[in-house]
Image (cartoon, rainbow, N blue to C red; front, top):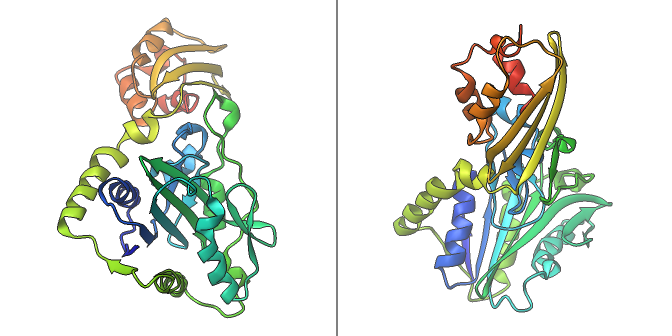
Length: 326
């Protein structure tokens, strides 16, 4: 097994690195890595229904879709991620406990009583500190998990405070659990980098054939290409969301607006706007303009920016009208 000491903290790069090593390498692989603040959504999730869009926009938090299923997670530099890539997926896929044993052993050595819980979680005193997911490619399996070490629980909660009642879809939903940081349970305080080194050393000594590997120029060129062309794109992160119906209603000083939008592959297929607001011109002009536009704030705003919006919603601002569409 090769061990990759990945020090890059760009989420687009790191998810691209996982896919690249899964598909282009023939080795068994172990990698530890961290991301700058971001939200990572599962492969089968409706991205917009998983995130607090206002919080994400205000704090410029990247939202990235991963290869594996499961729920959404918040990453920051206080969170450590681990990845195993193994040949022979037979007996490895869905064997979450097998891949988390090294983590439990390291925590046990630190006198932290952690345990495997449910389908894919690790807990301390009943509180979750690690969620795990898997993806199968040909005869190889990718297993990855989060390790909340000293993460901002407040940011985690705010970033994932979505409003799911607005959405009707068949996407996999996340369940926010009671969470905890590993650092809160340590008898002796250590840094996240110390913790990373403990895990690295444990995995390396487990097999004499293990060795360290650094990405070479060829690797970096291909990973960065994949990060640019796939993982940083709206099409992958939002456009791959399952078909959904979005509904929202708000009361403003000028009246109430109700908005119903059908979205497929991230694109607005139909939209109906109702309300008791006054309108100089027919609202169907606004509706027809938005058909075919990506259901993303900046693009809807651009599509409506040429209109004098108060002609269609008397005394309303563009921002107020946009607020009902997301």
